[in-house]
Image (tube, rainbow, N blue to C red; front, side, top):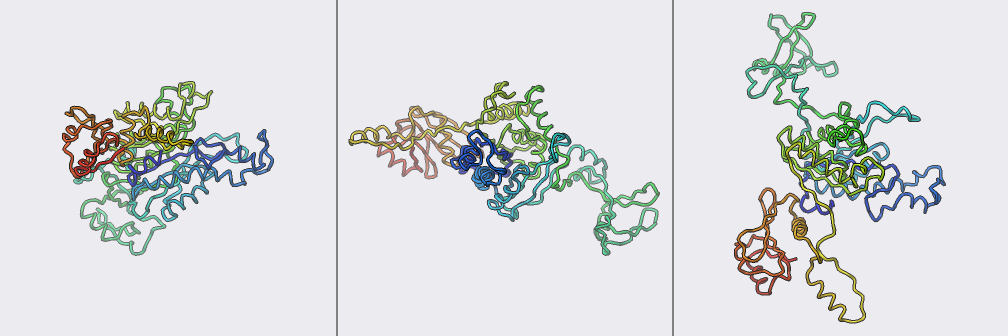
Length: 504
């Protein structure tokens, strides 16, 4: 699927978040030819017998334990990098089993110089009493930029609770909003002799301390009435400066201890599906965690990609963020139709695959947020593939060639062909497809990019009527695509002179 996204979304994705399957030693459902099932390898290499009993004390040290997972990840991360904007970033959730190997892999793909941070997320607060040694309460999120030099200051907006602390109003309220005050005195580790000076208080007394600002900056802010003098509980003067809400943001921290945890993700999914008694999806990431990452890594019109979408928490995070800041972010969720376990709550609830869970989640969130989305299913191409024909006589070859004059498969679907053509032309999945009105015989579609910057025409009829083509008003810059069998030699020559003609 990522290969299909390559042309229309090359260099357009602002942020990628993925929560790939952690390497537990299980087989992967991702069908790479080079990723043989782990048990088959272990049996062939003599590490387990036919019944699955270990024949060696440490099968993980074989290297195959890690290489199968890394081989699955490498091409996906490589393609993901190509999709990122120059200032785009990728976030990968991972646990202790592969974090060190994944970091080496991402250093190779993204460059060690583009490593941003290894975030530590506190996933739960308790439990683990049955563990033999230590209970693991955290996971990691590896954060890389496509080009670190292109990434600006990373800040996130304040939460509602943080904004509520800004209550002061002054002459700057209409432009800067309310304010709160912070102490101007420098902490011990930041004390510098050049910033030790005297400040006169409202009663004429003087205070000499190490301050956080230079004296020149203090004088300027005092002249602008942005300095506040307060007495503390001991009656001593305390100098503070005003910090305004409209210029407030928080620097990002590598330790995510105050984020929503796994239990929140489970509760959110249960509430959305109105099923408090079942586990539709195991260990979904909480919406707040992903929303936090997107707040400082995306703009209001960004495209966000998650190609291990699972229950599609990322989609819900994008939609919630759009509601909160009136953004127009778009999401692309990619998930294989991995079957749910036969006796699982998800299967009992009617979900045959994980992809169906994610689709239903997006549908419910879109209904709540008054938004919309499109669903595409990966299927066999509508174009014929070349068959190897072995025959002893020439007539068999002739018959085969005659049957393959039309490159479209038998039973092709109009809508599927239109979207396939659009992707091949580099148009995104949210392009508009509209039938051209006013034509007497032919059915022609106009496919346009969402921003209206480019468009082309497609006709899938088996025969073109010159009069209908003339009605389109094609020019040298127009792109017209039709089936090769629909063209006569004369019409093909005329169209080639009139516009940019392409054939199927």
